[in-house]
Length: 573
Ligand SMILES: Nc1nc2c(ncn2[C@@H]2O[C@H](COP(=O)(O)OP(=O)(O)OP(=O)(O)O)[C@@H](O)[C@H]2O)c(=O)[nH]1
Image (cartoon, rainbow, N blue to C red; front, side):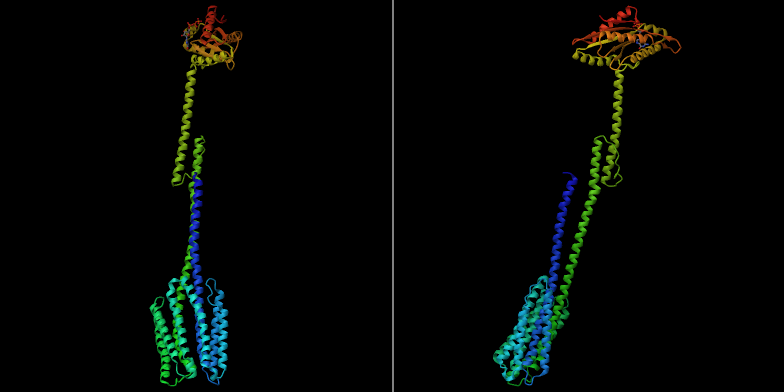
């Protein structure tokens, strides 16, 4: 597989893996952030539901006071009830508003049924309060108070549901939230405990055994809740604050509040007057529950602070994951671009350069060879290879030139530049073969310079050489392309015309003889020298012809021409 394709494939696989991994991490971070957002909302709902439950509990105090009121009614008690109801309504409206903002948690509180139950309870209370005190039988009073009691669990269920939702989002604060829930219950049971005394105080009658028992049970439940809160410890952000509030709960509620109840119980047992009616009791008892609310608020505040910190941590984490993801993708893209630009593209260019070198194209491509890295080394090595290849090619050309020159010299007569005898044999053998195949007539003209020895003897060997060169030149000019001319040896030359008859060969010989004889040679000393040559012509046709036979026949004819006086042409018989 090609590297560029491999890179594209690995890029795609890598990008998929990175996208998948980043997508997963980002999704997890987003879900966590989303959970913490929902948890914060659940926590706000918890707080609203707790306040609503507390206000519903609180409303029972003024209810008890109004129901225990005599005729004429005390407007101050009525006024306290109106303000308590307004506070409950406000708490419920705030809970309802918070529910409308809710985007994750379930709605364990059914506002419509709560409103309906509240309206019915208040209606029952108002009807009973407007009746004469004598008509307010213990059953009717218990019914009215019971209806008020029944409201609180509706809100407390919501507290439980929202607390669970908050715990799911923030497991770290679950202990604080459980303690908060216990504090809410503590407030509720403290309220219930006070309400047990409503009828005895309103009717100024002794507590019946069932009421003593109820008080005992509620005290036990309160002690248990207090112990559970303590047992869960002081974890959280402000242990000193928790301990202080707990100490105030112990002192004010468990000391003063329960002490007040114990005093009423003792008076009941002793048959003494209570010295207070329900309203006066409520006025003294209800404030002792305030530290419980402070405990609740302290714990709730602690939970909210921790949750807010977790939420911000989740948001920071999400931001870090997102920005890291973008940075990783950018880095990856940059890396791939760099690898492509600095490795793959130079590799492809180098490959093309090697292919060009292989094809004998030595054109220069020096881009990138200044680089200091491994690719630069490779490109420089390629450049060296190119230089070496050029040098080798030049050496090869020179070698070929030398071989050609040597071959040419081996075939050429050094003096006249004509073919030598060996080259003539090679060239004429090819022609002979072709003539045999085509059944053509092949002729040879053999000629020899007359009295050449006397030229040498009279004018010197150098002049003899000049004569040989001159004769060769004259004959060459007389011949056409395709007619082989060679120095056959010494002062003897041979011509092999291209397929011609004996007559045509004789005519050619005659033309050559005439040209030699008519061409004088001016010597260095100014002396003019004339030379002649004698010619022997032979020809043959058919598959049996041989060069030796032809040359031999021509030689015989030449010999005859010498004998007959030289400077003439003789044809073989
Ligand atoms: N200058 C020179 N002389 C050569 C060369 N080759 C052969 N000769 C001479 O050519 C002469 C040939 O002489 P011969 O064979 O006796 O014949 P000739 O004198 O030409 O007489 P005929 O052929 O009978 O006319 C000899 O003296 C050789 O030395 C050469 O390359 N240069």
